[in-house]
Image (cartoon, rainbow, N blue to C red; front, side):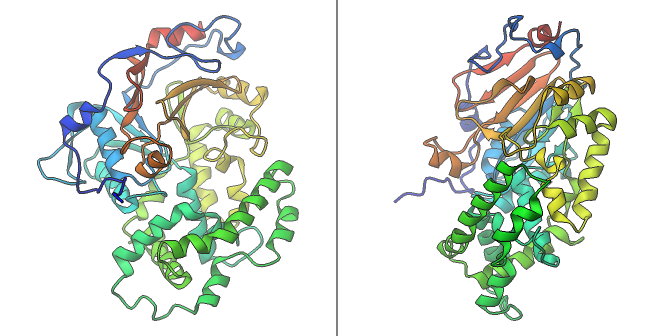
Length: 441
């Protein structure tokens, strides 16, 4: 059976990429929850929008989110957005900045990792942008932080709040472990100091009492719905994690050895990917636009109003250094890269929305919620959201019946407005700056 995932050596040329993109533009389509390029009807306009001046980013922004370890889709999307060109060399990792690329900011909306097919190549593609001295802002995604939580939990003393974080990564992290083992450990004496299979299982999996103790430990931090969801999720992952590892050809000893190598690569000062979590930010505010991975809640709204985005980003990094991983991962800070505005998530109410608007934020640009028909502009919880996860990675696309790897980006510029570019929609979606501004007048 032919592999539906393209090999990373078969990188398309510029003409191939452009051929898969729309050649026409259209007003942003509207459904019951979305905004198009026409002015919202007065009864649709959230009250907080009135008499607010919408400020655009000072420089053009190219927002690409959720590449999920597909380096080909990521680089093709950069080319489609016009910020890079390929050198004559074949394969990944041979890019140069265009004139537009030197003037623009590339904001990566999180979830660089998991799923595959090329976690390590994706990381190297992102690093290449820094090497080219592009203006890059890298945001934290839930899949990225799940890896960090798993690695940190393994390195620290077990307690009821952290001992589930490794297995909580689930099957989607297995491709990364397979890549790391193959590239760094295969053909070496990796097993020299690794304990036996049963000892590795005890290191990696939560203890037998975790399922009884966690609901009491989490009381007051998570909603009742959140606790129930977490326990049910862990019951499933605890049962299936080893099975997924073995399906990928990894024993628990190999998984444990790989996790130690990942700690070296990502957490040690001289690790190849040490820059990844170090450069990561929680939020980025450009004009009236707030860029993040998932969404907001009341507490984060108050933090942004009283202390601003710089404080939120510092709090994000300082909390990562704390030994109490539990209180970080289930906090308002982490909710920013995890929420889908479910009952199990920390709430965003009218109080939070008022604070967000008072902080000068009128549009949230996010990833996290994948869309098969390109980007969506929606009013959620009384706040305009640009949903920009357009299903780029080949594995997700194959499982969802979409062809090949994805190509696309969300372009935000005060002269053009918001442009949703996707290979999965027949036209580029455009809402002009004047038309979006009309919402606030």
